[in-house]
Length: 430
Image (cartoon, rainbow, N blue to C red):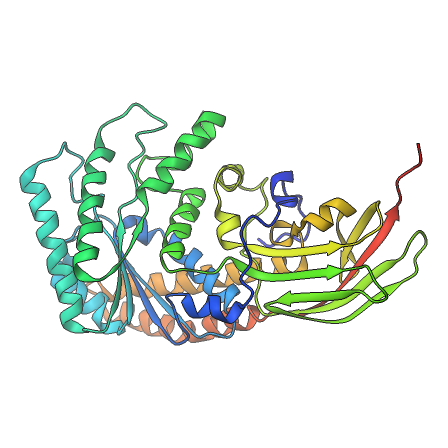
């Protein structure tokens, strides 16, 4: 459900620019591992099949690079191991669920089911390492140019409950994955360490909520998935910049510097107290679609005690040389918040505020869920012994899919917005 009005917590509302902003947005985009036209497959077990971190990545690409056409395919299956599982042995899985989609980018996360929730056993470990090598070799044999990212498996939660020792086994598996990536010239992302670190930090602040980051100790919920998303996107050198606008209100006329947006019609006019500054902004990206904190307090804590926003979601506004006082920021005539001249000079992060841009991003997230639902339903049919009626349903889903993708991309195109910064109170004299 899309919320028109909601309050974000103070730590998000006034988040300052904590990372340096790239002066050249195109340069930052060029360093990103994904490119326009890529076909991405996420391969894994039930944690991938949750379609959380995978949708997060998709939403990042849609909102950050709205002109790109990147396709995403989720090939996660519950219970899967490097040797395969209930959906078939590994070679069948690869032929049917990966190669048939012709991806040129593939990420792999496997390991949670491979140790059978037992203490480290050499025979089980060798099956994992041998099976993983076969998997990567098969991918490269099918397409020598494929870009592969190996993911160190997400943790078993041994932080918020009594330790089982299971995550120690997964850390050994993670070390192997990192070494294999180095040997194969593949990229690597660590899902274990960052999530474990956040579990520890949040547990110190709120043990009850911390245990909900991974409720069953295996499958992360949204907060945990966003930490995993951040790790994957960082490994791909994803830019943090959404937009950046810096206005100097001093001098004869206000001046502006902007990145990943175009600012026009910048004017300063007299107001009832001291005046106002107005401008029009045509952005080239949208912020990430984080939901209201009251809807997901666990995610809110994760965002508070992590650097997800700093690393991925910087939509900054700085206004210097303002007279001391309090200012209302309006976008499209709607009040977004009140800020002091000092706060505006230091910089505010619009990405977490209730703006028209965030509402649009939430619509994109809604579209993305629909697209993934269609893909999931079709995927579950084609990997089973389908009846003729089920195959007809699969074809109907296939026909609906491009329409849903079109809507998803159409809704991701940024709109032009009008901004007003109005002084509403001046400091009183002593």
